[in-house]
Amino acid sequence: MKIALDNVAPTQDAFQQMLSCMKEESGTDADLQYEIYCSSPYVIAAYDQGKLVGVGRVAAEHETQSGCQIAVLNPYRGREIEDYMRKLLSVHR
Image 1: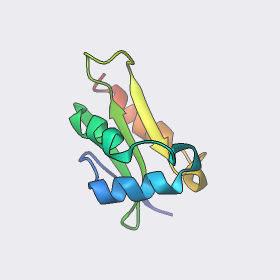
Image 2: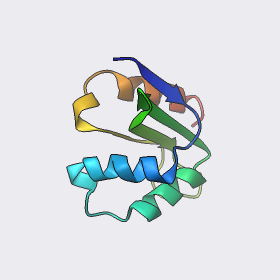
Image 3: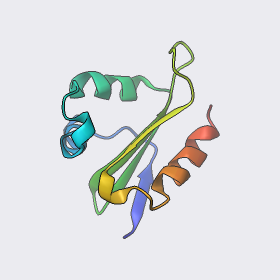
């Protein structure tokens, strides 16, 4: 497994495909979440052979929640992907 990180927001299609794979996210409005990620000042996307497996962002100053928000597909959790994303995003908090 070789995960590639990119500091550009993923496409909406890739984002929606990732959300559809996440059971806990299946009932949410994917369009709204995508807009929140795209409007964030800093975004990181994680890819496994071109497939989006995680996305993270730094919350904007005007948002009530602060810090980083990271979502990673279940099979990729516990593989330090979140840690790397959090480290890169924390530089921009």
